[in-house]
Length: 399
Image: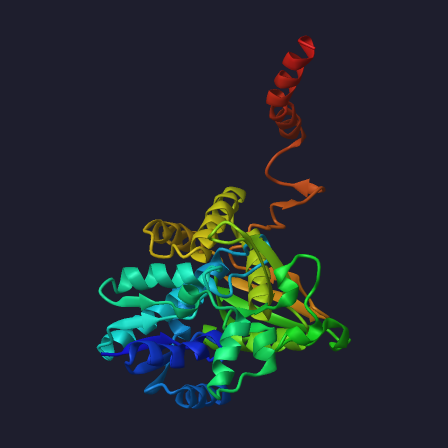
């Protein structure tokens, strides 16, 4: 029999390899699901790290296309930002990773899967819910949570056995992905201190960014990004390119405070250039093609959708219902948005669409129109305020 370990190469999953071998006396296979942010050099480092720690073999599985199709596409179409700040960098990855890890466990005929989540955060819930739903016949092992080990204790365990641990690994927890990178450290344990510039691994500090802005044009079809500056691109590659361009201009850095699945408050730093750029561009394009009530209903449903996805409820049937509504709303979200990148900011300069409701042939806001006359306008304003007037008069009589 064997154990398949979801392996990031970080401190906690590095600890899991020797611990699982010593505790269960079974071969441990490490699996890294590439959900973005993994270079060829990183991939080789993971192979070497896994071998050094004593794994029987290491597998790298590409999950970027599935991540975009099943998750990121809806985060863009829904303009999903948790707390109006955080673009859900991690939650969607865990679903894709769980699916791929289960598939590998089936392939290797493993009796158990393991992950390195602690007992304090959201990832334990995301992994457990997905793994138990996808593979109820396979045991789930969680060494860090079960033992209650701190990062200092796992570091000590590894160093005593001759496995080196980088100082930065102990100081900051970094999770790179296609939709962004999250950063946890001593500053995020409280709410008063910002992360230092050196904690952000891939974006240039805004103060050191170019003084000259970069204007880019993003094309959308059905609410999905399809081109950059006129060149058609695969969505995964487009996101990767926007991460590079946005990172060079310091776009996407921030810190989010929110409620965890377990009910406590949590704080995390992140850098997500592509997510910030695409959501802002898409949101502005929607404003010229959707009616106010489409946007009103969609905003509420999208916020609810993001909450459920963040909290490990991707497999609830209501998610498919909401996706159907979002897909329907995107049929006319075609066109382009021009975005300016400058010293940490992404500003939408303008949008165009063949479905734009901003029709100068019909009306110029605040000046002229062809849809009503002065008498129509006067009657409308009189009727429009009736309910408020009746409420005001009723309350005034009884004061």
